[in-house]
Amino acid sequence: MQRLRTFLDSHCDNTAVVEIIDGLMVACKDIAHRLQLGSLAGVLGSAEQENVQGECQKKLDVIANDLIKDCLAGIPSVKGLASEEEELPVACNAKGEYLVLFDPLDGSSNIDVNVTVGTIFSILSADANADAASDAAYLQAGNQQVAAGYVLYGPSTLLVLTTGDGVFSFTLDARIGEFMLERQNIRISETTQEFAINMSNQRFWLPEMQQYVGDLLLGEEGPLGKRYNMRWIASMVAEIHRILTRGGIFMYPYDSREPSKPGKLRLMYEGNPMSMLVEQAGGGASTAFENIMNIKPDGIHQRVSVVMGSAQEVETAISYHVKN
Ligand code: FDP
Image 1 (cartoon, rainbow, N blue to C red):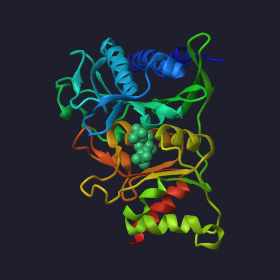
Image 2 (cartoon, rainbow, N blue to C red; image 1 turned 30 degrees about the vertical axis):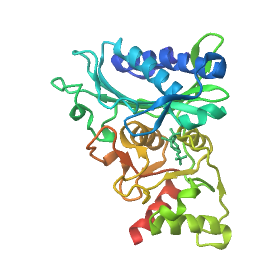
Image 3 (cartoon, rainbow, N blue to C red; image 1 turned 90 degrees about the horizontal axis):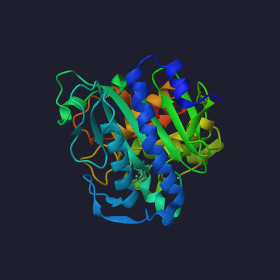
Image 4 (cartoon, rainbow, N blue to C red; image 1 turned 180 degrees about the horizontal axis):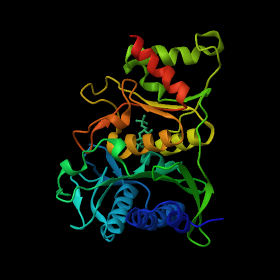
């Protein structure tokens, strides 16, 4: 079994990126430890404040954000960072060559019920003259990402990672404090009979999405000709991890609850890094109208509609939108 650092040193020739991933994992191990202690660590419940998106922050959202920020700021190659929990980007080291964007604790509405949550991250190159304290430095399309990954805090703590050359997963061995290589070159099955979507939003979706999901529900009696099972954890990291493990399609599509916003999930630290992982594993990642990683962002907290997973099923979902 190979340790994460040994794997990175042999697999990735960019030493700065290796150091960033290695450094990030220091914070993630700390987050995993606090999550495991739960109420004993006093980390459950609300922080009695809202983040920039107007969402109620959990105590652990704030703690995880601070832990990752402190870790990244100490890594010389990190020029700046942007987080779901920070309104503005934060400049770190003037000579740094990389920008790190992250959602410190995705699925945090699940923390208090002891359900899987995760940290998602995306690494971008920084322009030498870029101002890392301004949004503009970070507004690069997802296809510019140098690396992306997530840490899943579940029954075991896992790191799933790509540096642009396949997807690899590592399990944290808490006895020795090391992430150990678990799966190499993960591939997502092309077809699936499993979908994940928050059905309670059905009436707010576009007619095209209503029709597609309606046909999924018709099973073998409908035009898709097969019976589908549904899974909904309400934690994107857990959902994407299931898809990387046994295939499936995950959707958080546009809906009319907040018509001016293109979706619920965030492009820069949810949509893009998950799209890179899914595409590197042979899956598809779209808004249902365009490839997520081709979107030229206009804000670090920009939202996006998400349809990702098994390639053929994603194509089927897209076809409902194209034909109308
Ligand atoms: P959360 O708000 O709990 O952080 O990105 C946000 C996210 O979780 C995803 O992980 C999850 O898929 C989705 O929102 C669930 O939201 P709803 O329960 O509002 O549908």
